[in-house]
Length: 167
Image (tube, helix red, strand yellow):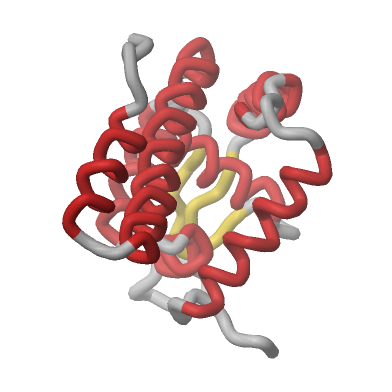
């Protein structure tokens, strides 16, 4: 659904009527980031629908495919995907149910469960990646230098809020 007017610009106008320019600019920036996230996730889910994947499931498959052995403990997956363990468990259950991943006992830690990508999971991840790459992950409206600048700007923001250190 295309809106007739930009609700963020309208909110910024109202904000600026009540507060100084600096907070209204920051409010418009953060609201724009959040709205872009919503729009891009909806786009990814639509592109991934033929593969019976959501973006979180796709991310989990790709994470597993990038590992040396194609497997990780659920807890490690949560750390690397930056989500709570219960969210990873839900994603893993769906991947296992669809035959894209399998659970296995950890060989040295009886408390841990390994998640292993299956051959079918690798095939689906590869095909889904081709679709997302062809779409440039929804960022085709931005030229390459603008994409790089966006990464740099968001990296600065992430560092400032403590997402990662300078090490």
